[in-house]
Image (tube, rainbow over all chains, first blue to last red; front, side, top):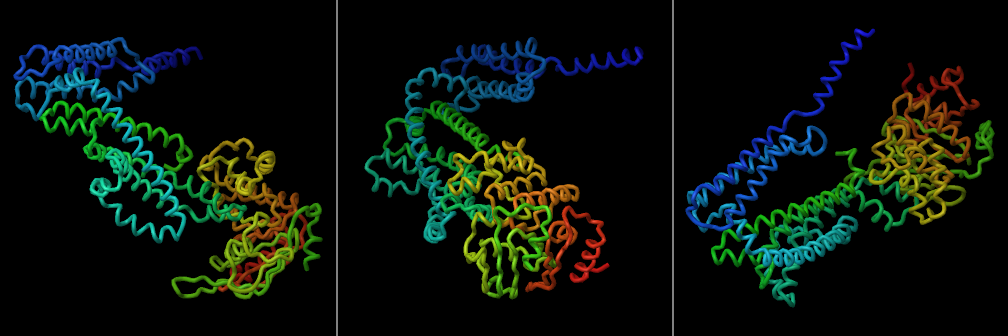
Length: 332
Length: 265
């Protein structure tokens, strides 16, 4: 009996040790690749000066130290450790990317100015231009929120009507099929004529780009609701409004979200164009302005901001979807 | 005949809410891309208040169509259906169809599903306890907050029954409600269905493809012909509840019905 217990114990102990993971080696490699970026930036001479070299080297160097610290004294188990293990390869790759990017641009000039900018160049843009960029972000978000909000709302309501009412679909569907494929920006001349200000015209363009996918997907979602659900509703005494609001709409919600995701991407794509229309602020306007002056570092820096904004909004939409569609978990 | 059928309900209390159904010369056609498909042909059938009638027939013969017409979800091509003197021309929560598939709304909880009828008619406020009662009746209280996809097949069908019963229907139309369940769950639900019918006293019309099930539950078994369906034979089941499948009379009736269906062994 006691022999058996003894035989089991060492196994259990080693299993406990296995539960904790070994050193985070990927962190050491990441630390090395980021340190390389700092060293390349600081030790090699610049072919072309971009500014903010010291700040970049400090930031990248501190990150390298952070990775090394996490690798050595960081957690051996738990959520944080799982995240670190998962993203380890990406951390290494980003360090390698920053090193080679800095090397190929500022240090050697293989990728020449003004068409290419090193990471130090982008950082320099943020350091010197941040007040103006912040205002531009504010203006762009206002335009986007108004355009996407209006477009998604109208698209949703019209989509439900198209999917539900045969008469509405009779008139609406052919029109939607005609104007659906036309790029939203093609409407710019007409919108200039119809809208009192260029801002209104810009809002309309963004609304159109985001509204049409929401409309198409919502209408197809409402039209493809399992007919038996309506039979159940009618049998239990439901009036038409109840059938729409409590059966058609929730049942079509997964389709609606696909439309919202598409609309979000389209709205960002046209945001830049919409801000050319006589705007004085906004990320799209800023990109346009800097392109004219060959300020490509500023253009890239702004594009990075736009990409991050879009990714953030997509993330928010995903969270809303997961919250509203948690009943779907058993299906997908 | 209706008097006999009612007298047969041995232990059942006086029906608090049930309805008599009168089907006269009922015919129905489907319009299939211009060509007419005759589904039902001159059906005459009277169901007494509180009676439990089973419809048997070859697959695709129009049994489900007949139930849909009685529920009022579809309108017949010819003939009439009368419920307690009133012509059936629209669906009504007093006559509820329970489908083979539970058809619960997947986007909302079991509780909200059961509450659908009360909610749709705007009478849920103050009657929440009736939803709880219906869930208790089908032993699903613990799953009130669950989503339909978290239920087993038998539980989902019990939830569908609760969704019907919460409206206190006078007529329950059962379209093979146990057809997709495993045999053990079927047996349990047959017993429960019978208990509910005897307790509530509603009229029940059951479509089934299981002769034994029909004989265990119904006081009268109607055999329909191939499409276009007409009534081929009618069998009264003069047996007290609960019935046992090995009862010699039941076995004899079973053989007789299978013979009518052309399936004698």
